Image (tube, rainbow, N blue to C red; front, top):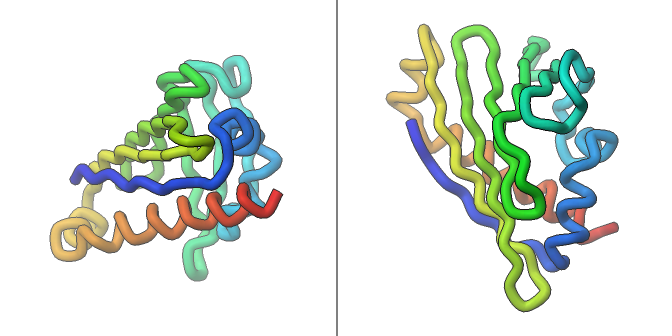
Length: 143
């Protein structure tokens, strides 16, 4: 499953990237994030891996992030894996009239029950991505 979401942020790209690229800010716009721990490689750079733990309903979901591209301020990409899910995310940041246009291109590959959900309810994934991006927008614009 592939989809894209675009959000316009009322800040210059330089400021957006400073907020986006700081892991300490993640809990401020991702309320379900319980922890973020660097595992291997140079933190924040291509090849680095980190463990993210999210609260999803009553369950804790452990996800491994691997950074696959870092060309900031233009792009930042990575893969996110957990049991039954492989997710590739490519973030693109453009500046227009002092605002930042953030586009996230996402590829999901699921197995088991999640594959069934993705088939019957593909909009659910895009809706969650949109909510996350809008939370970041609100966070960034309030700084």
